[in-house]
Image 1 (cartoon, one colour):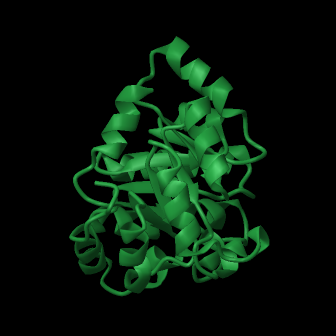
Image 2 (tube, helix red, strand yellow):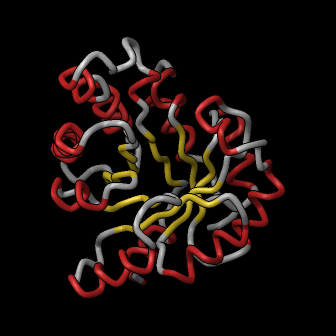
Length: 231
């Protein structure tokens, strides 16, 4: 646990994570299994080429076979340059050779995944968790998570179901609540990313910023040049 947690925490620049969302892409990726697995590929290729640090494959409505194919493609595209993390599905993450799993409220308990990792000798496998309070971040650290997503920070359609935005003050409190790195998520753009980092976030995670912006490589370069107060 300490190895991967320290590796993440000791990053020399803000961590930039692209969270996939194929339904937000042209065509929506919903016209069959072929489209569902193929539609995010170009965005993943673009994010890897631009220098994104992590890609979280978050396609909750894909059946296991299609998700496995997508994650395997992402791992191949990455070639070790970008950490590939699978949302929720530990089984797919392991089968497809991903670098970690991001756990939600309905996922396996963090303690069980951390116990498996220790028993399997997989100290390189990252475990993340989504949190919506400072208490949740503390619990994530206590149970063995290596990092936490905290949000939504700003208003965004993809996180509307989680309620009102948390805001920067609550982000700062969450970042100060534990020693694990916290990534801000929810309505993150290039224009407000610096505020999140100033609040103590170790990085940012976003869907639309990676899928809808023009010259992504330039945006990634500018964001990597920012400094996090967590450093």
